[in-house]
Image 1 (spheres, one colour):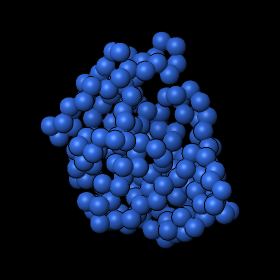
Image 2: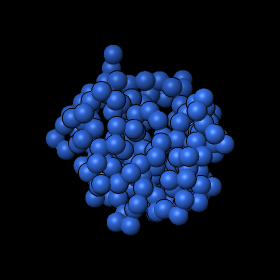
Image 3: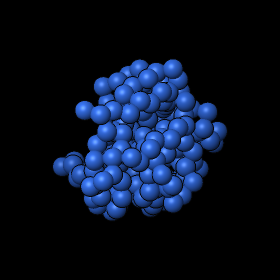
Length: 175
């Protein structure tokens, strides 16, 4: 399998190239199961988090360990939006997303009990990769609907030109 090398904080990995759409190959960034790369990415993002941030907000799956390490480093709590409804969810906030990177629509789910943790809080959005910015926009709408205020948008990698400003550490190509 063809790979693409990435380096963060002295940690290098060769990410597999995937083809989510015909003729469009991208490196598959995965933080799950790689604590060394995850820590390097979180430490690289740490200085970009706005000082006034009170809560971090992310989506499952790969950004969860990244956000967890970043939250530990900053001493902040975090909240996770799910990509499917869970049986325990009560009165969830539901937000549709059209992700252009993968060419499929998604739905984000946030249980009302977790949404309450965003109420009147200054929130930084955290992701692994931002491409079109559509997931970040959906996350921002969820935070606003929960009564929070977005004070920062962060991603480890930028791929292409997102429609909204996002602080990033490095770039990934679209091949």
